[in-house]
Image (cartoon, rainbow, N blue to C red; front, side, top):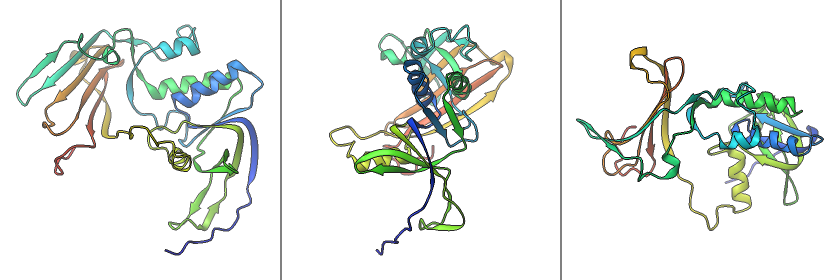
Length: 277
């Protein structure tokens, strides 16, 4: 295969103490904590979505222990964390019925009492407001396309670049973006982040560790008949419609406004090639 020589691209650059890629809960929490430690630090968060929360569509069951440490007065400050878990059940399904599995033999992380049913998109929007109050710069709509290296060190990222052709060469509408450089670069991209995969390969970060585990997940938000809505109820299932050779299961979280967060996950190690999640 013939390698294509890419021309050097002249870009503008901005310097920060810390550059954070990803405006999800991890990236925003890191930004807030850094400014709490040293208000004079220059911290920037780069988010590929059009706004914070645009790529965080899931409902979730949130353990508030992290918020308690990061922003102890989050309740008084109006965090969108209000629906406490009132009922928690784990069901094994068959084609014709169900069997409830007692909670006591389940791992601790499967116990949801004391936790909250939340929209993570709304939680992230609230965290972004807290970050900006502390002086964090947040740039939405800024996808990061590559890492910037100085020798063997990650020195920054290229953000806002678009218009490359399929072979990687600049197309007619190419925009070079800009370099955002930092003394530290945090990659908080979430699952299968492209820059994280580059760093993992370059520094062999997976050596000696278990491989990452992936699944196919489908999640939706439904508004249901109020007569069938049970605010604060959490249900997880396993079994049907999956067979014995596939891992996974479903979840249903009853949130406010007669909404439920419903999803189904199938582990990628399923043995039946005809399984259609």
